[in-house]
Image (tube, rainbow, N blue to C red; front, side, top):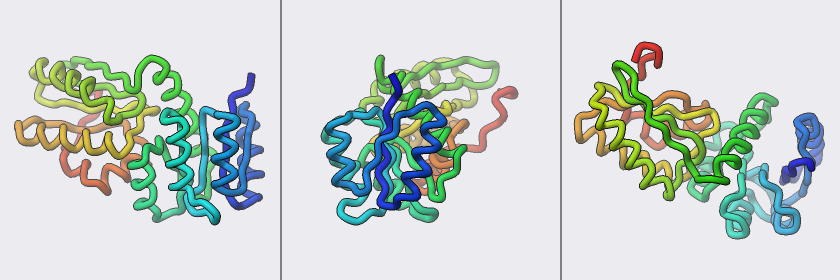
Length: 234
């Protein structure tokens, strides 16, 4: 059975482009020309992944996101933003969007976003986020897969305790390619990193996708960490 993806966009050429690209990736593509139609289609078809433009008439992508999350809080919703619309992207993340891509949509960016979504869906069948602590000679590496959300707090706190217990000079937060975070997850990471700084701990971040690096820069998380050495040297 083909996996379903719903694409919501008010521009027909964009929908046609997505049909061609998603068919090449093996998806059954559902489309909607406005937000209201998209929400109705989602409620009827329940696709695992939704791609929605942010700026649309009738119902914008932010409201689409709210309504889809009301129907299914675990739906993978990827918002499509214009260049320079980082405020809208962060607003969407605060409403539990799990990723975003920029217009004009590049094939590689779409492929990577879909891959991250599929991996998060697989992880979500067991738990929302997967955390593994690895010990090296000079660092404790906390590998993060899946979505960091408010539900991740006890798991993340326990993982940090394990990392601290190793007594290494550096703690590395290593985000897998599938990793994402929503607004609550950004707040959780900020709180944790502020605590680390107050304790005099050296923390760095590796592996973030370009999109989430921009988000971390914009909300100030990047200022709470230090430059990260190559993993092979830590």
